[in-house]
Image (cartoon, rainbow, N blue to C red; front, side, top):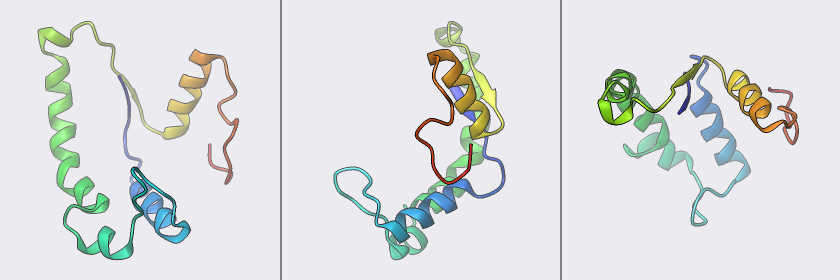
Length: 103
């Protein structure tokens, strides 16, 4: 399992805003809206705020269970570090196909 810790810069909010502005399709043709993101209690920003600390507390406990001792957990503090790791594992360029100057 590879986990990327939130960096405190609001990555989920930037992604949500980008999807609203660009009309990017999610799954099954759905699109995010301002109303859905900000007013709907099941919207992504609210879900992150509701579940982050719970998941942060539960995941370490989960992976200490005997059923999961075979799993290796790698914790990255930034998406770029996870991308570089995965690229090294696959032998590809971590910046390939990316735009926007963020790596």
